[in-house]
Image (cartoon, rainbow, N blue to C red; front, side, top):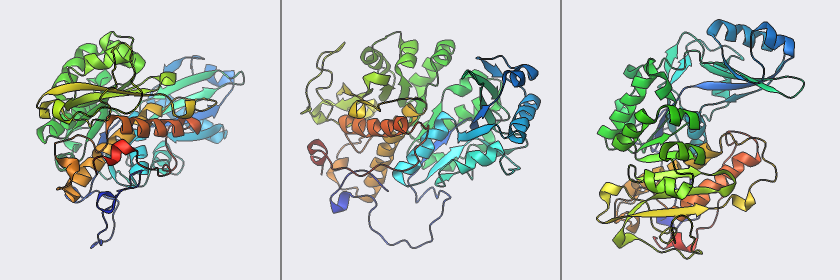
Length: 431
């Protein structure tokens, strides 16, 4: 398993062993290290049109418009005929996260969702597959007769952006298509809160089935919150779900405020840690926060400058490694923060995908820990049931670097992995 940083021989990924069988892109549950993600499969389409086009289809300029299947088909077909489409991007917050994970780890992940049964050249489903890493296993997708979702951005000559959202059949994922064996052997299950908007659709029950399956097999459940409005509108559903089933919660600062009422990310994280094991908060120009728990006996003080904010000396133990709260003999909360990598890109045109990139780095570290534990079970890295391979501070550096790469290239997904880096002193302590 590829992992940034130089390791001593017995701690390096991959562990050098001959491969007795030919490699396969399909996940083998008892042999592979992988994560599983459940998502609303959607393609983002960029197109240039005039005002007459919008009027003809009854699309309100400058707004986000929900369009029916027939209208969406007509709009898309005309855009293709007029050669108005400038680009396609495979979308979905979990789809982005899985793709980035597979690029970073150079290893497998599994996508659960729907896919068009009949995929034609230049169709949305075709573009989704073309823009997704080949190491994302799509063999467990549910086939549907219709299209996957389309998020069409229509740009008029004055530069105004108008959105036409066509859900298609992206919410038709049935609970029967949730593979228990695949989830049971995974390193983590990651999904998003978006299906909470559609409790009348099959995908909501499919998501709950996947979460319950992961909980049953003691697999970490990772949840991203989606948008500030979604959190505000569905808080009564979210909080019980988070408290009962979620181990790792990821969000931006606006979503954190909507969930907790705290505008300060540190105070929001402190409140959320009463319900989950770890929390990742991306805070734009302020950087990102990674917070969680460790046990007192294994807490390690940082050698970085001590920071204070709403919580005094909050990063004091950021060289500790995260643990599940239930696994701590005497749990303490740990907070770590990092400013944007190199101050952030000089120009940011689009922030889409930055949080997904940070989460993919965290998931890579969680998966690496499981891989290393099975490969070198006697290592001192596993003298306690740690949740990750690296410390809070080290994961912050990794997540920050991935976010920078996405922002710098104005794309929601990584096109390549990151250059390898030297381990810091605090990391090699464990070796």
